[in-house]
Length: 176
Image 1 (tube, rainbow, N blue to C red):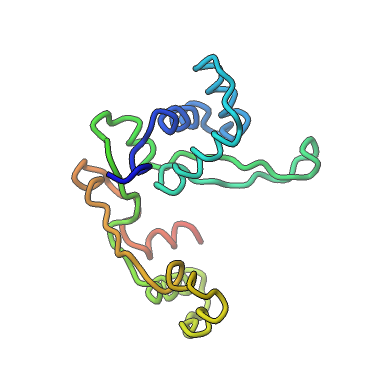
Image 2: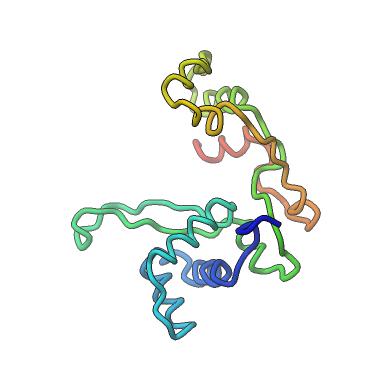
């Protein structure tokens, strides 16, 4: 198994802190909770690295609060547990790599059309590959022009039920 594809002890600790803190989960409060549990002071960079890995794996999402006067007008980055993250905490049999993508993968063109429908906007002109390659170079292929067609086999084997298995349903829930 490639390094970083499983939930390590720190990631489990961060994930459980996010779950416990619920609506009050953001960088500093997560750090305080981990410090309280372990009796050691965790560097913020370590916390943010673990959060980034958990986000990449689909276990947490981020949202920004309204700007706060006590933060000099800056917003606070809240952390929310996803359904996959909650299930990973509840299920001790969940080990190894877990793909948190939706069960019905789509191409970029299908995604653009579905997003256009959900936002009631036209989505008729795709970005030409040559233009993206000119603009971004090699990164265009890795980021925008190629796909993996990832399917969440493990969550389905473990009995996970997706709230929005189809893209149109998920986008409709976001934009209505």
